[in-house]
Image 1 (cartoon, rainbow, N blue to C red):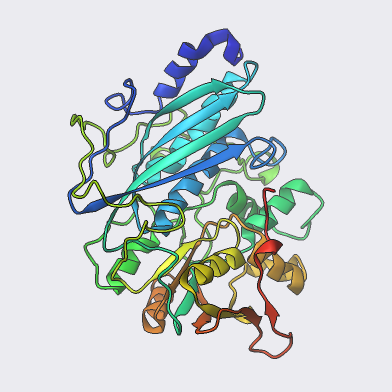
Image 2: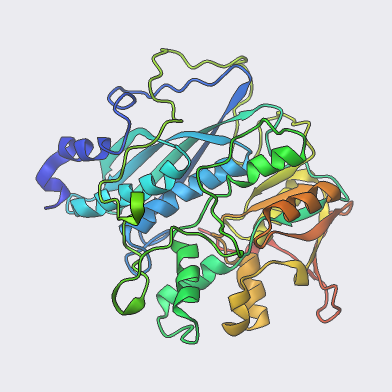
Length: 413
C-alpha cells in the first residue's frame, strides 16, 4: 500500500494518531504561555538525499534526528519545549509504512521531553521533505543568545565532538573501522542516527547561575554513567549486531510497538482562543538571537549542529570578541585513537557537525563548575579575547596557530 491508495484524509488519520486529540483538528493550534515567559520558535527543514537517505538512515532514525535537531535549537536558547508542528511533503507512491516509521521515530524522541506533535501540513512533492517548527518557552531574562559573550570568558563544549561524523563514515563505508568492537561501532552509529538534544544541561546551568527554579530536568538524561551515551540501548539483532531499526523499549524492557501516547507536560487541553503574552509588542525570537532582548545572566551560546568551529565562530562574530581554542582541550571520542589519525580526528571534531552539543560562553568560575557537574566529555576548550581573531592554538607546542574559518564546514550552497 502506498500513499495514493489511502489519499490525503487517510494519511491525515494516520498522522493524527501521533498527536494529542484535544490539540489537532482545527486550523490552528493555540499554545498559552504564562505571563513571565517568552515563546521560542525554531524551524528546520530536511530533504531526502541531503539530510537523510535510505543508505544511512532508517525512516525511524530520520524521524528521531528531525525531532532532535529542533529540540537542540530550543536547548541552545535556554527554552523548554512546548510542542512541534510538522509539514510533510511526499510523493504519491511513497510507502505508508515509511511515513508511519518516520513519525514513530519523531514521537520516540519527543516523548522523552514531554513534547507533543501539535499538527502540521501534508502536500505532494517529488522529493520527500520535512519541515518541523518547534515551540518552547523561556523566561525573558534567561534567554541564551549568541551576542552576549565577553572578553575573558571560557568556552565550554558540553560533550565530545566528531562522533556523528564517524558514525556516518561507518554507515557509508562498511569496511571502515573493522578493528572496532561491536559496542563501540554501535555507539558511533547511534551518535549519528539518534542524537540527544542537551536539554538536560539547562537545569544544571540555571543552578550554577543562581536560577535553581528555572527548569525541571528531562525524564531521562542522554548520558549514562561512565561517559558513554545512553541511546536507549537498542537490542542486538542477528549475529550480535545492534538492531538499529527496533522500536523504543516500553515497560519491563519489552518493545513498545504501539508508540505510547505522549505524557503530560504539553499544551493539551488549552481552550483559550488567544495567545497570551505580557507584551505583544516584544520583538520575536529568532534562531540566531533573542530579538533584542538582553538577558542579565552572564552567558552566550548556540548548539553545534553545524560543527564546533562553526558555533564558536558564530558566537564570536555576534558578540564582537575573538577566541583562542586549544587543540588538546577539544573533547573527542576515546575510540578515535584506534580509528583515525590525529588530524582527521580534529577535522571531524571541528567541522563534522551534527553532534548537537551546546557551545556556551560564560565566566571561567561558572564554566569550571558546569564542566564538573555535567562531566561525560564536557570541557573548557578555550577562552575569549578582546581581539576579533579566532585562533586554533596548541598548548603542547606541537602545531602552529591557525585561524578558524566558517568555510571549512558543510555548506548547502
